[in-house]
Image (tube, rainbow, N blue to C red):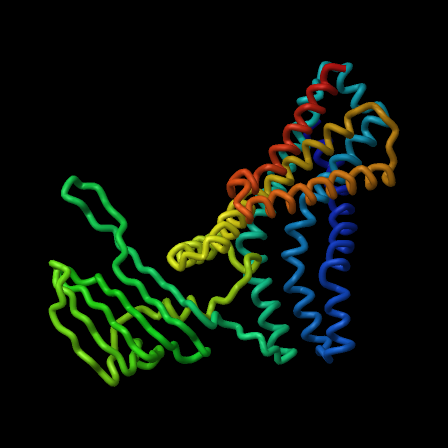
Length: 371
């Protein structure tokens, strides 16, 4: 039975994927790309490259929709042809029949997570960079001001536990793409010697793998927090990691970062004190984890609605799917906004649409099983 249901689910899933991918991409990117080709002179080969790079982002959003329509179409057809009734007469419960759709939904959810985490962020970033270069956009591809980079270290305590402490904090007022201005460095990496470096400017020296600081002052601080020495300099080289430059160059939107990059950015924004950006990042991180499970919710809802005795064709199934999809994504946007404003916690804001959809699916499933 499971093999039969799986073989019946795959063709509608591929059909649904093609339909929704075409609709979503046309509405999301195609018209904008064509406008750039006609009005801004974007070369066709660049437009094609951007088209391909934007596909993973579209695929992530299409997978839940495809799962919903595929399960709804499959189980509605089986119900209309009395195949589900035959299975129930053989003692197969509705829960058991729906299990195949739920298992398939979990597989699709896993694929969705891999694409959204490993492929889509890098492809989105490459698409943005490609467009900016082709159109010679004046928008900088780097962070221009308030560059923070904290560096931590796990220090073993006398009781054997480990405590995470800040060992180095790098801050720059501005960055012009090559040189940073208004530098402040707090360095606690050497035991018994802390220093504060303030410089007018600085830049990364790639040939020597050091930072060149210009026109500044070094304040040496003793363990008792008193000043040990003050030294002024015109040019000073410091052995620091390149990471602050990478942070400044990593000017990415939420959809251009995976979870690991988002967590790094969250750590930086937490140090900067930008509470609005911190809340948004927390919500987006939770959404990156929660969104793939929308496939499971859609699969459960679609299969359960499909098992209800009825005669539903493809057009009706497509209409029902559009209503469910519109409701889900509207709830997703509303919950995200409430999370960004602080009205809902990041966890609740990200998982609320899934919880509501799961509750609806389970309610319909229990109700259908009792008939």
